[in-house]
Image: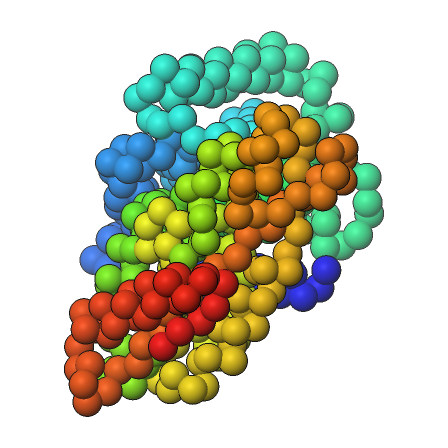
Length: 413
């Protein structure tokens, strides 16, 4: 479990880096000139505008809505909260923000992306407006009756008593933080990690809302984290294969240019995949491709896996000789051949003759049915005869067809 968490932490590196950098930059703000400080005051608006533009351009409705809420919070902070003596526990608007923004972040993290101007996107915007009006109406009519509950202190610790955010909102925000963290670890998407980082920045700004520099810095950081998450998510959409989750052919073409002089390329093909699809159905075929991709991601020797197209995959071994890569490829081929994928009854062939004709194997007719596949691999190495990536790729593809012609389920060079 710990190994899996460590493996998945890179998702949080970008938000964490921005938050840490913000903390170290805050002491330098007072040393700026008056003109520079005025520009810093507008930084949250500038960064949020960039994030909103990118969200609209890439049809990312969830960060779009959260950025709108953060801009509203920052505007209110500048125009209302910092212009007079501020008592957060007695501020209706502040209470509305610290309750609604974290809950909406958690809610949008749970929801699937539906775009900005789609019907679902417009309904979500209307939902935010309605809940904001409802909370403000409730606070305006019954705020004095709610104050003992929403501003109550449950824990009498100096640390908690020194915070501006009341303890009920802290508890609600902590629950939202745990929920978003779990989803971000599970799904590993930039938008989820962006929501988590932005929520952290929001609470930092809220708890130091009377300190102008901290308020400006962490509002900018929250907007920047969401903006960067939209860019990262769009990059993944362009350079990652939707089905398998590994880099796509487009990413392969980009990375081929920076391999240097010595590298090895392996082309991998799932044997009799069309026949497997015909016998077991495309759903099971998709599971096979996911399984193969997952095994390829764990290949040794520093190899990096890509989906080339259809049932074909590519593995690049930078700065690696073919003799060094072959043992790792053989281990991968054997691992895939030995893997048994359980089949549900609805995914099995309709008759026994179909099952016997498939390349995969089956065991039984009940819940213990399984299927297995094999792969053929062709390998080529850069060198004197193969000087550019196109020639190496063609040589690996030629070696792949050699493996198929020799009976499949083997590695050829």
